[in-house]
Image (tube, helix red, strand yellow):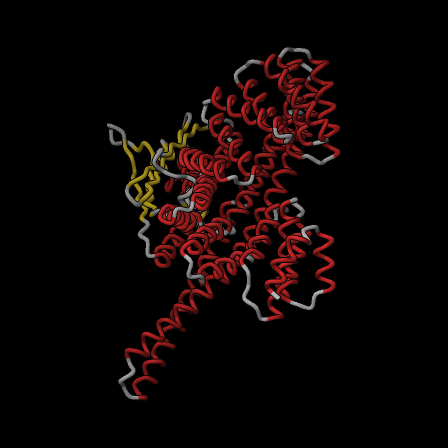
Length: 632
């Protein structure tokens, strides 16, 4: 029957013939091969839903017939969901795909297993593990002489470095991928995408001439091979590069070319983007009527396809144009629209990240529980081997002691997690306390009464963004440093506005600190900054100053918060004179959290207070130094 299958499949190459075989043959093996060929056919046509349908039918029949599973079905499902951009739905098929390759005795399959392990780690956000897996794939592919898998390893490394912000390594690995992929006949859309990204890297790093050449070559290749979408995208990026160089005539020429191609293929996203940027060029030439004409066309298209991002920057640029023209009422109206779309964009992104974080949490929780069970089983096995020669009574006593120890450890861990959760919520309430919110709203009301609508709108936007970011950050015990700094900058901007420029501030971060990879406990720095403002600077005559510095020292980040206020001793005297008996909770809660985090992670976080004095021995400010071990 298998011989018949090998003979008949080339004859029935068309989908109709394959469907006829499925209806007439009773042989499960032939049906499975038909499902596989149909899935491959539709995958090559980028018809994801049909690929998923026939792949799942093939797997169901394999399971029913109790046959050996085929890796190609699982790989087709992963790639089909990639086409639909439903990456998390496709992730469920990676573990069985990896298992099939790992169980194979073929060295080439071991290379494939390691590559898909890297892909699995990458999609779960475990970037360090993904880097390790792709590096192993690279070495194994070189040893086995597999240039196609070596290309996939470089592609995987480039993706990971993109997500970690290491553009130098990203460009290097993507370049090596292209060298191999083009020779191996890899998927052309992936090659186009990587070439476009390399152009982006060079443009963003200031190598705009190189980027222009990259985009131009990509556009020419797209036109030669009939890929109009690729050509239009590349021309759009090339036009923007000329715009950044100030070569507006050249930029306009290419934008018009990109617009024509985009209209031919009916890609409304590119059409709206080209129209808006052409409007910017006419605005820069002070041809305002022409600019408004193109802006209006871009807005119409953007609204039809609900392109929130495009509408956000369009109304922002239009507002600036009207402000330059002295038409402030129109400038304000368009700024309000910009703020509305910007808030919608932020809200959509927040909800997306919230769902993603929730899904990631559930997956990590399940994985952690499975890993814990596996570790327990392994430890029990070692224990049984070691105690095999002992009497039954000793074994029972040992098992009882282990069980008791586990229960106590679990109870301590749960109690500690509950305390951290409670302290986090208390810290959140302390940080966003009613006093701060009340004063901020008073400031907004003050601008409204002054009829300063732009200032009040700007103030309100910053305030809403700070609260939203604080609520989002409070969901996690530790966050990347850049997110903590973003929230802190918003807080300082609001306080500086609220107290009428009472103080200046500055934040310095060592270049050695990777603010995207390194994490610190959530809402760690803000309470100390709040103390510096409220107790150190508000009672000071003249203008105050706050300096926040982050330095890298081995495996530690040294954070210093320094003010030139009246000092802790004088601040305490003022507080006592006012009969303020309440205790400031912000920093005490933060210090309690640090003690718990030290206990939980085995870290050694330290806090040091220094009362600074001038040459005459008078108080000249306070410095708080926090030693924060790096969390990744």
